Length: 383
Image 1 (cartoon, rainbow, N blue to C red):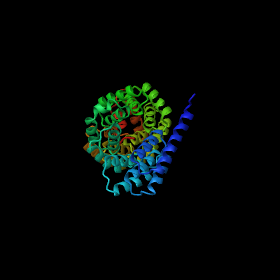
Image 2 (cartoon, one colour; image 1 turned 180 degrees about the vertical axis):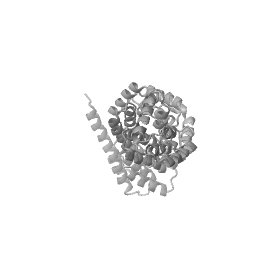
Image 3 (tube, one colour; image 1 turned 45 degrees about the vertical axis):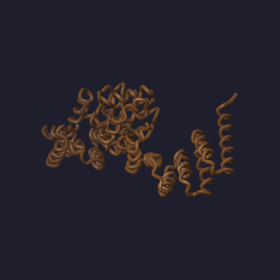
Image 4 (tube, rainbow, N blue to C red; image 1 turned 90 degrees about the vertical axis):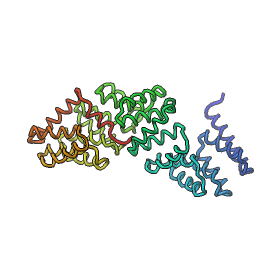
């Protein structure tokens, strides 16, 4: 009876025989191709790098061998090493979409999205339209908050996404953060039909459920997500948001802080934490949090409105009115600015009284009005 272990052993033996043959006939193109193809399929990344190094000793400027070595380095997740080897390939004058694709992938995996963008866009412009490349490009643009460009690429490749769960999930998150809940729900369904365990599809659904205040369903889905993927920042933020709506402030702050450790660039999540801190009466912590949101995006009206709310709660009326003006200039529908106006108009007189107004506002959101919540949950770059 053949076991997986014995089959793996036999496969490694075949690869080692091919290595021996390569040492005797290193310039045989079909033999080289066969070995590296078989080794890649077997996931033998270390052997790929070792064999490429051995062959490069006598042909150090062979771009094909260098490219195979880079593939091996990518396979063992040594992305810096891979980039160094791919740089050598480029220096030899090779201009191939496959090189751009791998360079983009390496920068993407290193979270260097600004450096991933150009090679991925060149690859796409060259006509590469496989699901993996399109997903990398869309997700990179999403991370860089280049939403219009990402939506354009998505629109050009819808047929491709209908057959690929990972790409459909990327679409779902893209449209979620582009405030298109209809398309977000549509693509989440596609992703989940193709793969019921799709993380992107599930987090999109859970976020939409939260925005619709279907809190019980949302909480169950988010807890399942954390069980499956404890490093998924959006799931922690989602649970923290539900805790905030339930006014379980201690749990809300703990979960929101955990989520922000994992996705520190998501502006809306900083806001949810800031409001939880405000409800707790910790105005200094809330101010620090809202200032962090301001550093990420100075043009998000809700940040200026939140800072206006803080000023109003402290009785700094002149400062509050100025920040309200800024917020409403950026967004006439800014909800945090309207809250700040409410505090001023009711002449709260003390942070304690202002907190009562805020508690009532949060209870109102929890009861019937999800517009503020939806805006915050979908504000930020992809994480």
